[in-house]
Amino acid sequence: MKQTPIWKLLLKLCPPVMLALLIQSVYNIVDSYFVAQYSFDGLTALSLIFPLQLLMTAIATGTGTGINILVSRMDGRGEKEAQNDTIRSGFCLGIFNFLLFAAAGILFLESYCRFSSGQPSVRLYATQYARIIFLFSLGMFLEANCTKVLQAKGNMLLPMGAQIVGALINVVLDPLLIFGKLGLPAMGIQGAAAATVIGQWTAMLIVLFPVLRMCSGEKSAGIPGELTAAPGVPAHRVKGSLRPDPYVCLAIYREGMPSIIMQSLYTLYIIGLNLILKQFTEDAVTVLGIYYKLQTFFFIPLLGLQQVILPIISFNFGAKNYDRARQTLRCSILFSLTVMILGCAVFMAVPGQLLSIFSTKKEILDIGSTALRIISVSFLPAAFVIMFTVYFQGINRGISSISITLLRQVALLVPLAWLFHYKGLAFVWLTFPVTEFIALFFSLWLYRRKAPAPAAQKNAAPKVLPL
Image (cartoon, rainbow, N blue to C red; front, side, top):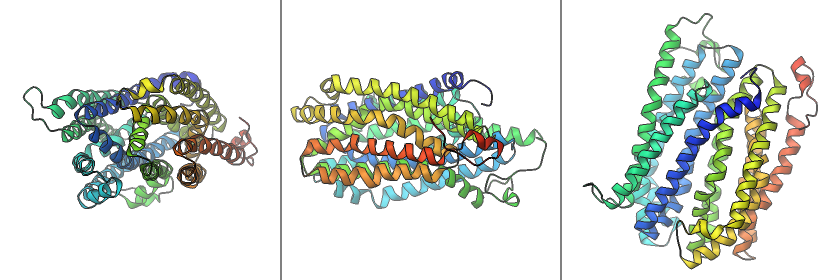
């Protein structure tokens, strides 16, 4: 990460991550496809549960991101042994997060479904699906932590393999469990949930044991030097025991909080948009759910790129190689913009064909074609904004990263959608490009003010840093 040319490094590390995420996006679409064949109300139920799944994913990946940043930064500083303490505390946080969501699935799920839909069949399907997802979510939380540890150490292939295997198992089991084939019981929408958690647990087991061996191997190898604390953690708190260290846990969440907030707000704004769209028709809610399934094909490369550049930027920031961190940002923006231009072109050209994968209902096609064309304009500024948020996180400017997220998903998106809905449904979709362009200008302003300049490598005061 210190000397390999950035483009060569990205071309080496990105494909495994992107392929794994792409396979995951395919199984999400396949999941929705089979549920739609089973029941259209089931597809609407998945749209209602989608924000809750995003919230669960936000906590899981955000915790993993905090571990990833600390481990990468320790590598850049040559601090080896403290990584084990960070990984152990991360495992405990994964178990805690699972217990939190399992309890929420028991106590609050039915209330959420009653609040979100007026159709009894939709509420029933949503409750059946989400309860299984929540009660068996431990596999997802531990898999996220283990994947981020391996990626921080430069191992992109094993997480890719684990996620591909888990996704393929999900795809194979979906029709078998939903419709009851090969002697298996017909479980309906509960079968889709069961297929999902079986795939998650399979992926978790694949990455769990290598991480456990890595920790025990590094400790027994007798790495020279004293046990070193994670950044921001008092040295005397690093114990090497199996118990979680509260100081290390706080350090993990301090680093991962921008990711958690960003994705959690993503959940909240989808819930807000669903409530606004429901005032027109529940078909509009279904269209929004279909859009988020389709857009993953073009946002997946950006999400994979984020996972790759975050440890690169964190490593070089820890090594005070600020110019290389800035170069990583430039390369990532160029790549993401290319992908988003392609995505915008596809959504503009064939929206009806994309929607017909899930439904041929005339109302869905009419509403959805307009929605996809308008929303796709937001892809272009989003290519910049998404890379800026991860860059600020990697250079220890978490407040800037959070500020961009708050602007996009709290201050602008839902309030603008609420204002625009008085003009009609088409104006609600216009909220997306308007929000992203405002966020782009704000990100550029923060970058000019906050980014470390090349002079900082010589302990000089930071100056304005041009792209």
